[in-house]
Amino acid sequence: MKWTGRRLKRTETGSLVLRWMIKRLRSSLNATVTVTALGKSIWGGVTHNTLDDIHNHWKKAEAVRIKCLGVPTLDMDNICFHLEDKSGGKVIYRNINILLLYRGRHYDFNNRPVIPLMLWKPYAPIYPKLVKNVIEGLTHQETKELRNRGLNSHPLMKLTRNGVYVNVVERVREAFKTEEVVRLDCTHVGTSDCKKIGVKLRDLVPCVPILFKDEQIIIWRGNLDQEQSSNP
Image 1 (cartoon, rainbow, N blue to C red):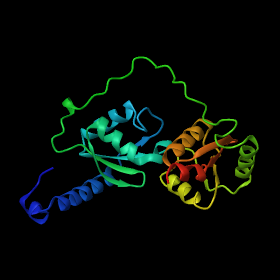
Image 2 (image 1 turned 120 degrees about the horizontal axis):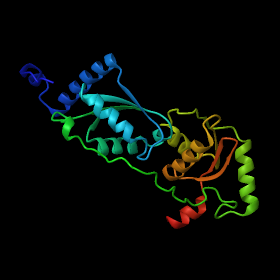
Image 3 (image 1 turned 135 degrees about the vertical axis):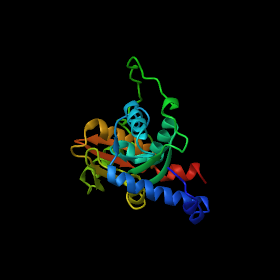
Image 4 (image 1 turned 45 degrees about the horizontal axis):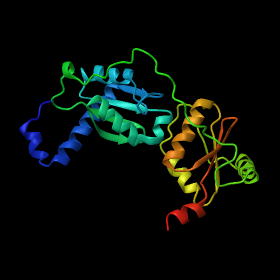
């Protein structure tokens, strides 16, 4: 990219230079349509193959447009962090699930950051049981009533497979202001992704997953009395 004196005079401040650069890069990417999709991975959506694709695109273009799909889109901040940390680039534009990753003015493909591949598959970690038979702080009868109420309630959202879940966390938080139990309809999403969504929501909302059944996620906002007593 050549910085002419005429252009620099028009964009004297750093913010104006950044706006002009983003606009130019976006227009060039719309013509070439360079898209990398993110899905299941070890770094919140970023895989070794994704990093290789990014560096290969950076050979020909200054920036790469990345389209994020699936469970990682629940936490876009985490995706941006790992993309910048593992690739060495900078996210200069973000709109819902579309990112623009810039390589930098002094990028050198031969000296790019390289993460060594795993030569063997590590043992799967042993996680504690996600949903207990009796939820902590409740009796067996109360837990059963919450699950039945959640299954019979109207679903808050219907999630699709490899969809965009950017607004799910905020929607659940808003629903918990008036509802105690929320149901998410995850038909055709898959059992594995349903549990991953439940774990993400548990950490981000936060909430308590109380049931995964027939690709339906039932989550409870928690015992507000205990939270208020612990945080006077």
